[in-house]
Length: 257
Image (cartoon, rainbow, N blue to C red):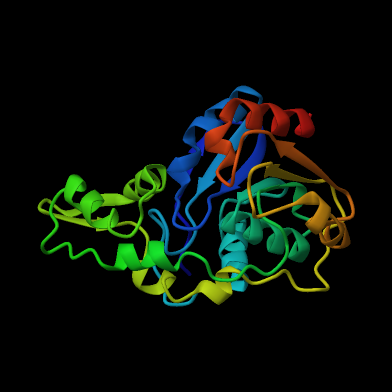
């Protein structure tokens, strides 16, 4: 059995497990984790399969991501957890909470709905796939290559955080681009129509984001999560925790309290 890699911050308190989004990694949540620790939480920053420092696999689906999380929780002997997931991580925690409501005390879903999303990362994945690390030897050179596909500087910065030295003279990405570039349908999959989690749930969304709109998605959210509340973060898009970190934390910790 392959276990997910995690960075556990804090020595005691309620167990808060945070799952990153597509092409991200647990390191993206370090600043938020430190804030939660101050409020009495023990935070597990988890890399999902094919991301960060976790194992690579040619199998990728929310069913498998849910099993990965279950194995992690069992291995760490966690009896009750609070789950927070962003984007792809949000889909994972929704699936997990519906499958194992007895383990999940509360659920927080950041800027994703339980609906189907069409594949929409093709240009980014094409850019990532284009990098030949036998030729491209520096972070600056990787950025120059990505710029041919991705004009947005913040997006490139986000992706470049995945660079690491595979050997002393060869760079590579931490995410498994070869597998992830072919998993668009699995990534966008809707929650099973029968999936239901009856405990307190927070959907926290960026008001400038196109991923979730309360007027459009609110009814579906309530069908799956009848004890849910939706809170919007102004002046924030899909990466709401990075765009409005202070307000994001205040809203989440206020809801948890």
